[in-house]
Length: 130
View (cartoon, helix red, strand yellow):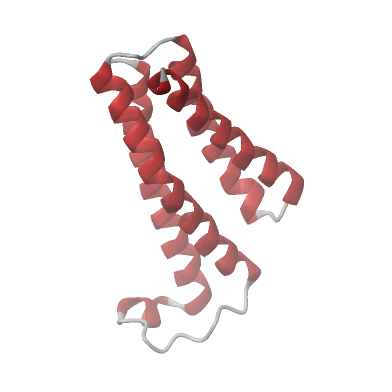
């Protein structure tokens, strides 16, 4: 399996981890009862951790289509090389590092992790442009 396809699979797993993390943090905050219902009447979260879990998942879902699309196109066009492999892994590792940095509220490291994931996406994109 190519590095890009391997990262594709792990990125899907990471997205699932984000969804489960948000769900778990919300359940711990609101309790099991409200989590079992439609959650129409939940009050705004009074915990910073709940808000951070929501935002980190939303941020992952914002970059997910870009990453998966680039990984697929790199694979289909056969332009995969050392740079795209490094970009794919950089994206994934940076997104993994992003989770605790955001949840713990560490602004500079969180921003650095986010920036590294963007660099990874650019590394995937460049060979496709020419």
